[in-house]
Image 1: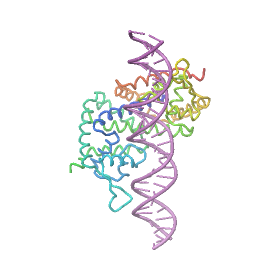
Image 2: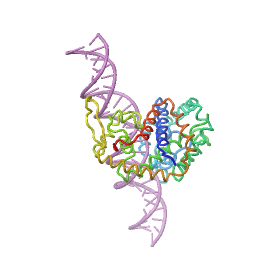
Image 3: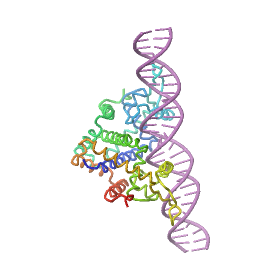
Length: 159
Length: 159
DNA sequence: TGAATATATTTGACGCGTCAAATAATTGAC
DNA sequence: GTCAATTATTTGACGCGTCAAATATATTCA
């Protein structure tokens, strides 16, 4: 086992670089990467409680109250007390939120097309394997599976 | 080119998981991962200006004023105006800072030993290649090279 | 029913990253 | 030498992640 310094430096840099690229696109839509994640998830799942939403986001603590607050204030999300359990709140997309999702999809298509050929299937595969091993035993993998499942189903807002 | 969704989810999760693991160790020393980076860099380079320090850190803007402020307040760093150029400040380790570095080295040794065999040279290599390709054209790679060079030289504080 | 327990969300505090504007000191052109 | 550009740092504003404590509602069980 060698010194993982180079790996962790690359990991941090790649993470930041990816955030930067997504931000660069999304700020044309006046949203942040975090907003984009929430919008895309809700578009697939339909209304969720705060805790359920958190299960789809790659963040440690599952209660993105303040992120949702900001997005409600900006007009992207509705929040109402969940019927039958007044502890929970039910979060759903507004029409503006749905419109943003469509713009995000456009943007993602462009990002993918522009991506250099280094993200080819065969070069990506060993990377995924190593990262999944790195994450073994953590709670992250469950979240990722949940997210990938969403890509198999049709959009909630299409129904 | 396939949808990079899985890659970016894994990237974010691996980044966060690594931060979490480092934090878990470093909080036994009452420092944060960011503190650890600064201490380790300065231990190798010797005194740096704020801008120079920033060139070694994996952050976008190269002026970690407030991070250094906090660390000065905590007693890990000295800051003095640089001789000959009163715009610059010169940042150096205090004795406490040097002591922390030694503890960090211990901690890193443990982290490396505990790391699962998935970080073997042969599985790591394609990951590094892909990440370097992903980062091509960005300013991150220069920073990483600077950091890796430090590992070739002896510690400043040993002199 | 009523008290203990569990669950969902909110809130406060803090560190960090990013951007842009402000300040301070130096350098360079003339 | 003076004034305009350049360079180094600071500061304010904001978003986000994390932790822990507080609040509110539901559930359980005696």
